Image: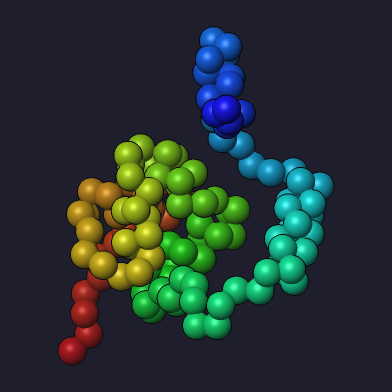
Length: 120
């Protein structure tokens, strides 16, 4: 007997799943936080594993602004019209990226890139 996932069952019944991209309400945010806290108690993360801190400068500013707006990498990529959420991760980890991607992400977060003279 083959078991099907819920998604497969819906697809077979001709119903299409759609993704809804919206901000969470405070009630939903609190409920999700309680679920995460409970899961972390039941299954604590392995020590030394997780996202490395962003390097100082643009990477940190992008990450802090994204998190303060409650956006995931995926949601920010959609908002900035970037097809791959890995671009957001690469920026936040200080990797080389295209200037056009950085400009699109900054605009999606309500930030502006600016060149200033360097003081010697």
